[in-house]
Image (tube, rainbow over all chains, first blue to last red; front, side, top):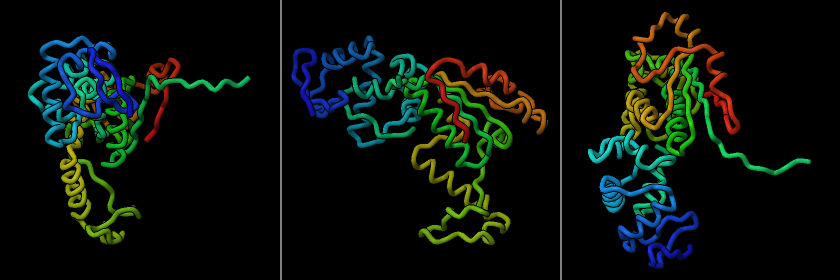
Length: 103
Length: 167
């Protein structure tokens, strides 16, 4: 485990850069991680991040299918909003652990 | 001399030639996993794998209950081959398997194809198999991009960091 300064705050992160304490998360920190990942956050992004944070807080498994059925965003837009590896990127920006799902 | 360089996987071509639940889902899970990692992915269905992209069969796939030594009954008891041959057993076991998969949030075949295509993946059908089984483009799910030849398939496999996987 390591500490990283994001948006002027020291946050604890895992070796691959995921926040380990979700309660430290703020919108400013999200912005800082997003710019590292090459994503520019819009209001829509924050809606998706909120959905992800709520899901994880409920202890639910995150899957692309779940995102598609969330009513917040469909799979296609999700891929466009977080290009490359959408679930990995969005969870990183949402300050939750790396998803342990194969689907 | 030899250099120990690592090349990132950039493109996968998955070939599915069988139509059982486990063969088809192996290809689908790997295909979906690829697009989710930002890896370009093309799925090619041939022979009995065509069942996975045909509208009338795609969501009714079976697993084989005969000649499968790994098949178990509930309680991890062995599943004898003679039992698997009784009419209705295969359908029942397959339905049970699909139900268990649903519990794990594993999508149906058509939904899985849609998710893969949403992520930029492409689905193709084999021309030879289509001719052989008398299958037309309209018999196939809308997410199937085209019916192509093996030559077309290899043309898609250009570029460094490309892998072909046969399931």
